[in-house]
Length: 279
Ligand SMILES: C[S@@+](CC[C@H](N)C(=O)[O-])C[C@H]1O[C@@H](n2cnc3c(N)ncnc32)[C@H](O)[C@@H]1O
Image (cartoon, rainbow, N blue to C red; front, side):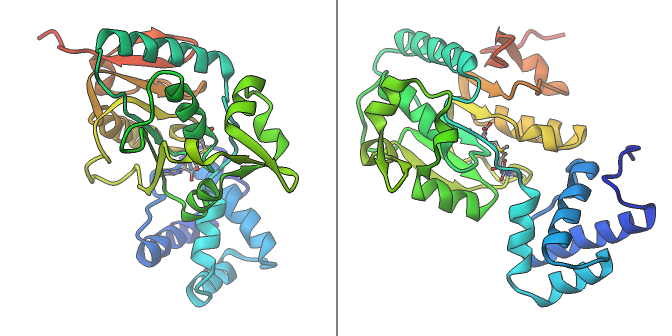
């Protein structure tokens, strides 16, 4: 266990385990493999918001108030994001997608934004694809998240100015409209994205087969063993030669690493090898 327990005593940590067990029971969501310090800080924040002094009192609230489990899940999942987050990395991804389109003429590129937050990332990826291929019959970006509140915000698709700080002005003019002091994603771009609930930590099959899987700034909240498990699932969602894109503080871990080559180290962009040499 880490030295930083997010301001919880050891005694409180066993209540934290009880709390995670209760969330599993009530909502089928398992935060057991997440980093303890982050969880502890977030639970503490929620307790303060609920005006409760002890973790035991908060456990009571979680059992008795049917709205509380969802409020806690909302607090435990961190949604900070923006359009074209890490614009330099987006350029590397745009180049790699263009190369793939040229190498596979006639193929429609399919992208998964896993841990999509409130939609900033999948709509940004849809802008890239809009520059590469005409709209098809089905959406070309699948955007998934654990938190229904994040998916509801992504479906509403309206954003504050701060979310657009890295978005090139030409793309803003093309795909967003100003309404009631916020920026709204235009319907044509929304149609390129389908939103689904998906829990990365479960053993279920991924929601399709993709040319690019973006899972950025989500693995960072998981302990190493869970990171490795989730990376296996992400790798299993790629077509041969497909691309895996991680966040700037993330890297490949575990056995799955040998199945990838590095496309762009700074961008954290990797390519699934089409065949792995026998050892
Ligand atoms: C910090 S946001 C990242 C948003 C975007 N990918 C980016 O890089 O800006 C992390 C997202 O991961 C989601 N998340 C956390 N645990 C998850 C899980 N087990 N399965 C799917 N999504 C999860 C959170 O709800 C949150 O929306």
